[in-house]
Image 1 (cartoon, rainbow, N blue to C red):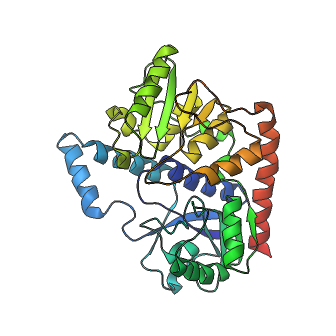
Image 2: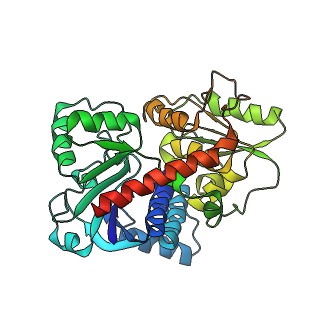
Length: 360
């Protein structure tokens, strides 16, 4: 089938972009043709692209933000199949509906009502007359509080043909707000093997050869936390690589760290001695590559991550994975020898759901 995929494509977030690639790859492996359909103004506007091109031509140094945007743009162009069609509103678009055999929305927090970018189109509201399926979708929160959101989401869920979600909490929300039954499946990043991820990885040019701890924090933190983690790395004879998103404003990254692209993110996790993070996808990649990791509780804007990690902990039988104070020497406890068997079972479940949803 020719499938139109709808996911979050705005911004420069490693997990988001890599789950987009993983979903595309997983569906392609099932024999389908896949294109990601973007919303209006989700990628760089023509004027912005022109300005970046002129800066490059005139050898004017990019700002850190511009270089980060450029590094993600290059990844998008190389690895994602982007549709020429653009979602212009939440209303039905018969042109786009006719172009594909079926539509999938997912994964990541596409249904988080607290996101500024959240819209009905992430529930495929613009599609008419074709199958509409949610695959590994997430709300990113445990409960929908606002009544207006509950009513809106109820109607949107009822219009979907099949629903799978990434967390038990999301299944609870779906089944509380609608008549739909939701199946819990793994995030698409876990659908690809370590060898498949190595095919797109890239070592950052500026990285030396010394062993390092990888720190990837997305929440808001006291400045002492990055410094405490840095000291932990020094005490253990290692460097530290900090990756962060622009809105954190921790100001602890070197330019090359802040502007690293998704392929470099994969390489950095695979070759790290340990991953310290509050990112769901950093943990997912740690599991894929069998890396030691530890989760730092997220505070402030960005909210609690517990429900997202709870499902990973349940599936992979992970214990003591959350940092307590400054105990950064601690590691998540799990039996890494069991991961291949667990992943095979969960990948089969994911594939079976998609196949049945598309054919029944």
